[in-house]
Amino acid sequence: MVQSITLRRPDDMHLHLRDDAMLRTVLPYSVRQFARAIVMPNLKPPVTTVAAARAYRERILQALPAGSAFEPLMTCYLCDGTDAAEIEAGFKERVFTAVKLYPAGATTHSEYGVTGIDRIARVLDVMQELGMPLLIHGESTDPSVDVFDREAVFLDHTLKPLLDTFPALKVVLEHITTEQAANFVAADTSGRLAATITPQHLLFNRNAMFTGGLRPHYYCLPVLKREQHRLALRRVATSGSRAFFLGTDSAPHERGTKEAACGCAGIFSAPTALEAYLTVFDEEGALEHFEAFASENGRRFYGLPPNEGTVTLTRERINAPRSIALENGKSIETFMGGDELRWRLVDPSNA
Ligand code: NCD
Ligand code: ZN
Image (cartoon, rainbow, N blue to C red):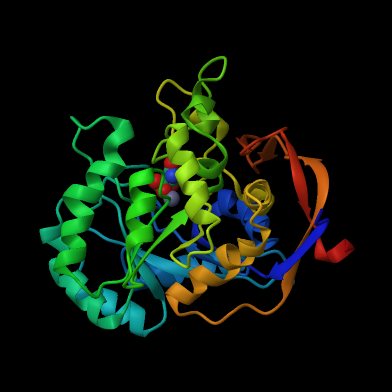
């Protein structure tokens, strides 16, 4: 049995770092594991301009632990009124790596999102020409659609027509959760379509939200699905296909805002993300494909150079921390908090 695995330093291709005190608290957990991250722009107010992205990038760099190296890759939050010239300028000035499309109302802080693809056609034309990736939260916002069907409906009603209308646009379908999305992305032969997959969607099905009671710390969007979908995600993630890569969607919320009458969506997986993913590859007998998923497929899709350096994980039983304290005395509950993990990321400082 393999006891230790060393891979090129990975990247997190979908990460929520938030801002201010929350940013200072959560950032070190990602920095320990990842060299770069695609940073989501759904702040309040959202990051919609080159100036705002530059300033946010600067705040992230200021919050880095002393002596650490980490490159935040910034995204622009797309609105109905986004100016194509702003996107182009941000890309050419190397501030924006990609653009994030939230259908208006689909998820946390998406109220300024897009109400129809026709509203952003000019921006998508320009992005297609630039080779700039569009990152999509792929859920229908039609309130008559069942919450468990929103991704599948989005594929048919929105994504397929969008891909036909913009045949050269690079698209990442973010945090996929269904067999339909897994099969759709796996069937693409053009190389311009890819998907990120979170640890929670590989490790849990929707029962996790209801085990013995309502479990808000297993609630995220898109919501966990049936077992058949989890199994399909595991198949494609561990298949060696270049179209699938690591994106944790680690999304911290203060405990009280999740344990509430109307709790926030988002799972804070940053502290043990790499261990959680590796558990999946180990269980699937696919350790040989782990490095591609974590460190190669994403950066290749984005046209980024490979990272220098490596990380090592060893087969050891550890308990995930239950919660992380915030500066204000409150806390964030962590993904699989208190559960036993079978891998441990070796801290380079005491390796
Ligand atoms: C994310 C958040 O909290 O910002 N929540 C989530 O459940 N994934 C938003 C998102 O990525 O949908
Ligand atoms: Zn997200």
